[in-house]
Amino acid sequence: MLDGKAIIANAISLVKTLAPLLPYGQQAADVVRQTEKLVATVKATFSHEDTTVLDAELKTLVDRVNAHADQTIASLSADHQAETNARSPH
Amino acid sequence: MVKLRICMIAALCLASVTACAVGPPKSASAMPTTEVDAGAYKPPLAGTNVDEKAIKVAFVAYDAVLTAVDGAVKVGALVPGSATALKVQGFLTLAKASLNAAFNAQQAGNEPNALKALESARAAFLDLKLALKGGG
Image (cartoon, rainbow over all chains, first blue to last red; front, side):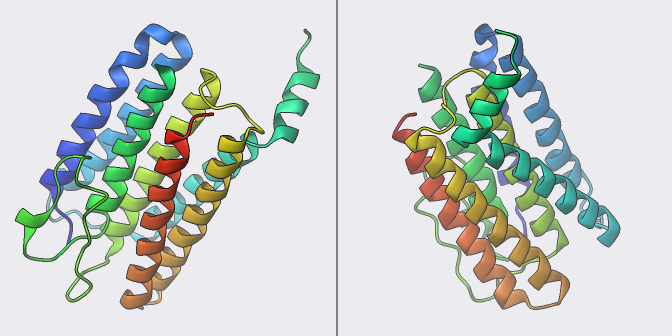
């Protein structure tokens, strides 16, 4: 069983914590916006108690997050950094 | 300063995953509502319910963690190839495997295994938080 109130409390805290990143530029602002969207998704899930999660919807989400994870995990390696630098004109 | 903020973001994402993806069915008052006590929180195994919503929330929260890590790399708080980045990489991989195991177990109706897998994901996120605290 999930506690919707706890999730929303954490989600609001997350957005509040991200907000101070704004002075660090456009990229940080993009991160805040993206995270806000994710938080909104979580909040929407709990706004209706009788909302059911369809199998197909869950599978799509799992596939998308796995793809995101692969991208993020790859971006942390030194090889990826070297490739990015090689592609850069400078 | 940036590192500190990224750590806070990660901790909050962690709280979203660990405090809410799995929880006790009745004693909601025992649930932590802040990131402070998320690390110490141990959901009781007996009677815990892992359903589609739990899996969805766990994956969405993991997505938020990934977004925060992307942001940390973009703003230069986490340097690819650094010791911290490689640690984070390892824990993100572990968390991904655990969440997928939880999804597969839940889909197969094996709730005990789904719960164990979510607990593994929780452990991976706690380690991830410690790794981020180490700096990068």
